[in-house]
Length: 276
Image (spheres, rainbow, N blue to C red):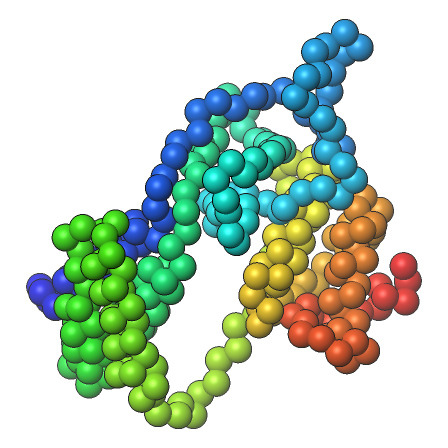
């Protein structure tokens, strides 16, 4: 039983629920059967009001248990309207319906503090109870969460306490970290089974969704790095989504040093640039 550890963990879990505010559950969703070409199927006499086919290469990326958020805008205004269309697939033999939508405002400062606390907590929690690094980290984290005012999470006082806690963790933890002889490079990767318990055309769709997700993450986080070492997937993308393929090739060119810009795509399939 470690009361300090449990207190820190509870506060971090509370912060996680506060990363979004003004939540609204979206209940009205129109559904139509689709196909493998990102378009809806209608008969000649079907009513199409309010519906339109997907444009070529038009998709934000994959949504699954690991990617559940879509950023609609960085600065929304009252009255803004957003049109969302989802292509859903399930390889289950039985009927499945896990589709739920919630709109909310993203609290950037709260989310930043959440991750600034979560990362050192989880790292220190792996150490033994006698480890001085664990003891010192928990001490700093405990002092930090003591600055948070959870009494009214939607109040100005709460948001002010978030800023105070963020300043504290930066000063007393991140700004005082000594150099470590070990350097860890984290590179994103996705493994996609070309032949699995789905049809080959679903493999092509999965490849496009995954690469769209990566490119959009790179737009949001320029420091993000990614690699994929399955040339066949790139060939599928070249055939099915040439505009997407061009975006990937641009990232590869930057990674090869031919373009002066931040890039995070690994060169493992650079040969595709010369075989478009």
